[in-house]
Length: 116
Image 1: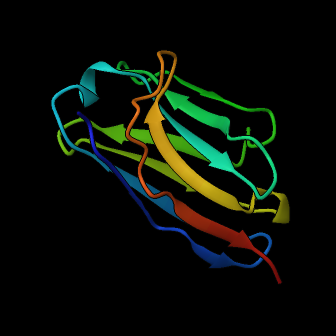
Image 2: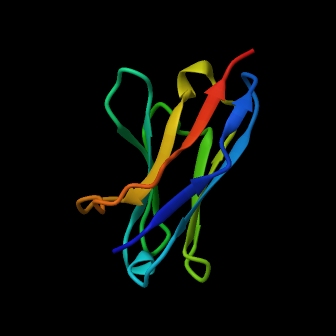
Image 3: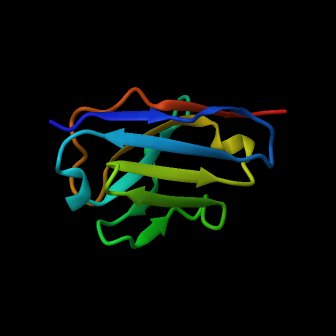
């Protein structure tokens, strides 16, 4: 069973930046596409960025041009660089497998709050 631990969230002003990290246990990490998901209060969880095992990326329209996903397979870690943050980016951010069904054991997530 893969375990996921997200970190790097915080409170930032509009226009600011944050870098999120997600450390995964287990050997399955490098074989799978990974995604960053977010869930805002009262809303469903949404997938905002994906990186395949080969390094190809894809983004939701709402974050395209502002967020960058990357991975380090040697460290079993996936990152999300978030620039030009907006209040509507406020959410709890999670990482998990993408394109296939997410692993059932979600991490605790990391809170991102964008506010002046």
